[in-house]
Length: 109
Ligand SMILES: [Zn+2]
Image (tube, rainbow, N blue to C red; front, side, top):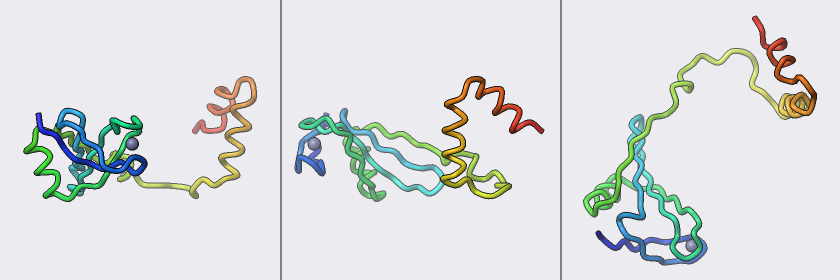
């Protein structure tokens, strides 16, 4: 198990082990990032990682997780984008009794 020197934005330099770190690489654009829970403040630290850093971390025994962008991004978008008024209307709807039935009625067909 390798010791990795990393940096927390709150605590500064900290040391974690390869077991504490996770590397994530996006299958769509190959962008990488690593994350760990800071041993001092327990906050989750996430940093972008160039391919060279990803290789170094994986070679040190860090767990590699790959992920894909959601397929919904490729779906055609119809209608206008929602705005703050839509969000407020939705919030008000959720405060009413029977909001689920109302929602079904509003979105049917
Ligand atoms: Zn910290």
